[in-house]
Image 1 (cartoon, rainbow, N blue to C red):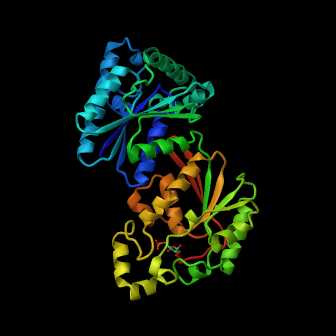
Image 2 (image 1 turned 60 degrees about the vertical axis):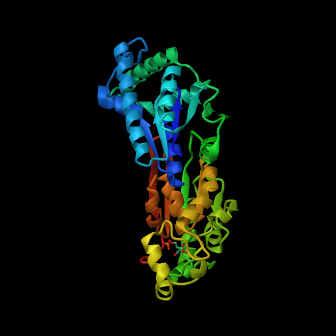
Image 3 (image 1 turned 90 degrees about the horizontal axis):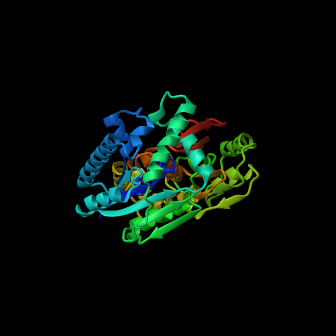
Length: 403
Ligand code: F6P
């Protein structure tokens, strides 16, 4: 069943960040999810550089323009549901009871389930950080001096405060996030999808930390182009373990996460930090193909070779896994990463890192099995409000042409 998530909250409460995070997570898990940001419609209709008076609840022209933007966003969202959307997120302040009632009615009469997500901040530091980090980078204030933009934005917030009606509707399912996740309240959530969103939001850390990703150093199986197995590092792989240790020696991550397989543990060992081994991080299970080379698979199991090439995301190795299975099993790991407030180095495997990297860099799910995650390359990810900053470092020894 289609679900509409209605964001609620004053400006600078992290709504857009939260909406995008939910969308990324649900898309990654295979639900067709999209954010409809009313601010974008408003900018299109009324221009980006409207002064704070536009948002004054007594400004009738402003009110009408804002309502029109909301209507346009709603229309598009309903059309999108009609074309097969699973979860639509209506991202706006939706700060009055009448606005929310109208939305609930519009969605429910189309048979769409509704839940609301309110972000409430009592902590001035969090609000201030949000003002600085997100709003001043917003298209509304592009090219405006910081001081002037900040003043205008504060005045805009004050207009919203004067008309704000906190979410208290008892009969609607909702999730309330207080002070960036210090408290999360759930009301009448039902069904696996909404429960999943609630569980995700309980993990979400609004001040995300950086994540380092690396495949293990070259393994003996890599040198032969064999899949799976539990082989040890090749001489080149051992050199990479040393390069990695040298490169990250001043990086402040307190622990390293590896799989339970020898090649990741050996790669992490020289870094000299506590290692946590996760079964979840073990490489995709190639089932009856485990231990074969890619050529052997093509020769001895042409059917597997062909079907996997046709649909690498969904194809499941006989007695093994598909990429979809891998994504499913990594769900708790993503939650653990989202929840962390300290950086971490994850040393894992090609398919596993494709899934994790695909999540953080918001890649289309279909592209996940094809993402390039080369050996001997360290990836740095720093999630931010609008996406994820990324750097890649190729470390010695360089090895070409190895899968
Ligand atoms: O070749 C190294 C490896 O980690 C294999 O163990 C694994 O089966 C494979 O990569 C996953 O990549 P692909 O899905 O492209 O075969």
